[in-house]
Length: 137
Image 1 (cartoon, rainbow, N blue to C red):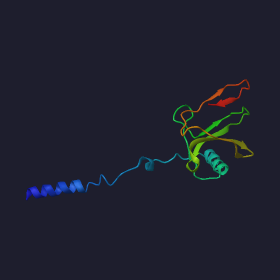
Image 2: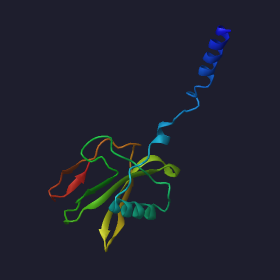
Image 3: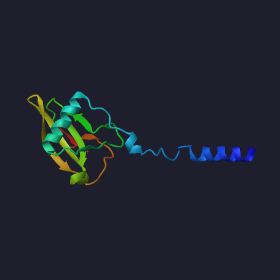
Image 4: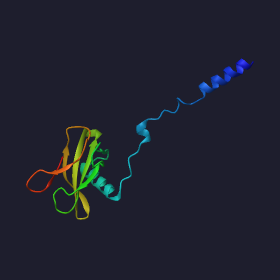
């Protein structure tokens, strides 16, 4: 009788432990960070410029600039431009970059390009010409 009770309890422990029913997918548990007010305005301008809503932000893997939104004065006019790294699964997996300028109280796309890869390793800015303007590397 004691053997049956132990066998029954062991079977219950093994069958009703529920360890296998909770399978978590790491991407389901993660969520993107909340956008600041400026970033939300830039993101809205980005989606308006590309005309689709399935935009996925891409983040640099290392370096000083680790956000999908990089603010930097590229043209040395005293105002920072916004560089946004993104891709659109419906257009392919390559990473894209859009440069937006703040004109008349709103963000406007001034440049958009497709990259060669699917990820961003690092973002850096250097002066490479005699004009004194920074170049995105």
